[in-house]
Each structure stands twice: as C-alpha cells, then as structure tokens.
Length: 144
Image 1 (tube, rainbow, N blue to C red):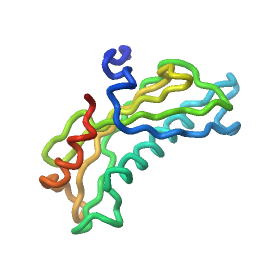
Image 2: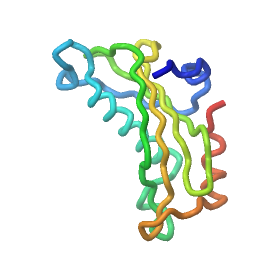
Image 3: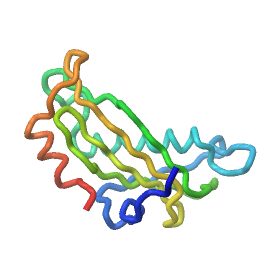
Image 4: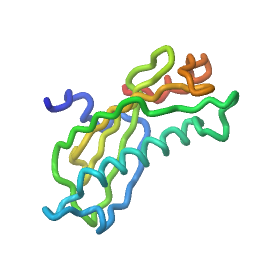
C-alpha cells in the first residue's frame, strides 16, 4: 500500500485531537503496539470526535445513527508502550448519505498510522441523507 499523501501527515491540518494512553496489554511479541490495539485507538478516537461535534446517538432526532461502512488502516511506523499516542481527526469528504473521516496517530510527533473511515447515516436500518445541519456541523472540522 502506498504511503499516504504528505498533506494527510501534517498535524497542523487537523482540528481535533485525542490523547490515548497506551497499555502493557497492547504489546505484541515484537515489543511494539499491536495492530489490533491501534485499530481500537482509532475506534475510540473516532467516537470521541463524533461526541465532540455533537453526533451522539442519544442526541440525534429521528433515531438517526452513523454506521461504519469501511475502514482502511495504514501502519507507518512502530509505536511503543508506555508512551501516549495522539490521534488527530478531520472529515475529508461529505456525501449525500455518508461522510469520510481521516485520522492520524502520532507518537512523539511521528506519524505511526493513518485510518480512513466511511460513516453512513442510517434511519430505520436504511441509509438516509445527511441534513443541512449535519453538513454544517462537519464543515468547520474539515481537513484544512
């Protein structure tokens, strides 16, 4: 898989940051954070981003939910315990029924992984168009 485009590795382009504590249990036999632990870090930070912008299940009218339709993770460098990880997040695309979130994991300001997730708006178990308020909520958080 090719290395992500340089602009996606620039921390200054992201508006949301989440600090994540690494755990001893995250280590693999090679003494670095394993891929499952890093995927969980992306998941935790993705949910925290959604909460931060107000996309919480308990606050959405009409039973709207966001379901993950796709996730692609690129591992760029080893990450180690016990040092914390910082996860940066920014939407990179908004469609009719979905939006795409790009995330960057840093350790000591070094990119260690990226993730791109597509989140689909769902009402009554079917894709539903994003309303104008949701699009307006995402816009200020877009990757700059």
